[in-house]
Amino acid sequence: MEDPRPPLPRPPRSRWTSFVAQGLRTLHEDGNPAHRLRVEHNRNTILVHLSGEDGEGWTVLALDRSTRRWAVGEGRRQLDAATEAFERLYPAGD
Figure 1 (cartoon, rainbow, N blue to C red):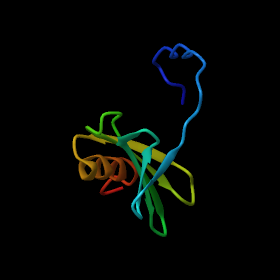
Figure 2 (figure 1 turned 60 degrees about the horizontal axis):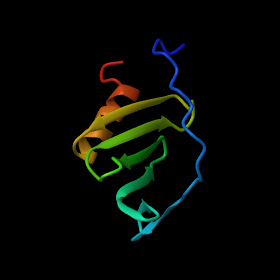
Figure 3 (figure 1 turned 45 degrees about the horizontal axis):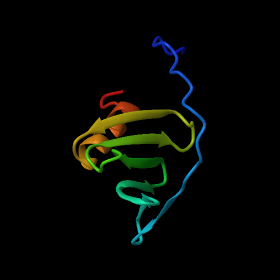
């Protein structure tokens, strides 16, 4: 399905950076510890949690491991964003 929104303009060229370890389960942007990333999974689903650049709010990608179908959720709390993404990927009653 094609995205109905207009395409984003290409940003100016810049260097790529990496996320680095912050404890055992969380990564943060090198030089910006408020910008965090966490990946978790179970037998069926992969969840990628990404905080806002300033550490506020979360975007979570839920990915079905066998089909590669995906859904995204957003929320102020990490749990709310993860719940939204998971429920969009696996709607109750379907």
